[in-house]
Amino acid sequence: MAKVTRSQARKRRHIRVRKKVFGTADRPRLNVFRSLSNIYAQIIDDEAGVTLVAASTLDPQVREQAAGLPKLEQAKVVGKVLAERAREKGIQAVVFDRGGYVYHGRVRALAEASREAGLVF
Image (cartoon, rainbow, N blue to C red):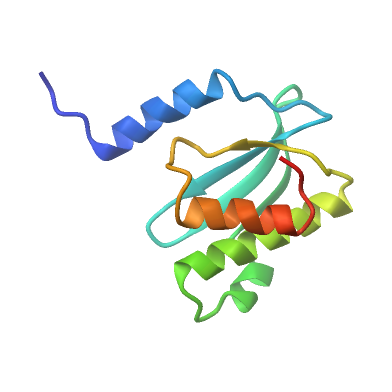
């Protein structure tokens, strides 16, 4: 039997989560992707297939705020900026899609920061 890699296992978990989590126009999906050096988050309307709002550690606005911070703190900055951009677009409630990652560490920090900034999920 072939060995399953960590990324293959995450993709399998993500597919399983996506069977249940679906974003609508009223309550879009907040998706998280985490790489070794960066974290990305976007709010997606799955009915229209459109990304409504996005933020990551690569954005110029986030990059200047997160310069020199540890990764956990950078994730908090991304969550805060994402929530601010969502409120500007009139989005208040979302469905959280952890992307197959464990709700721990940077993923949890991003989620809690976006909650504190005004998103409901």
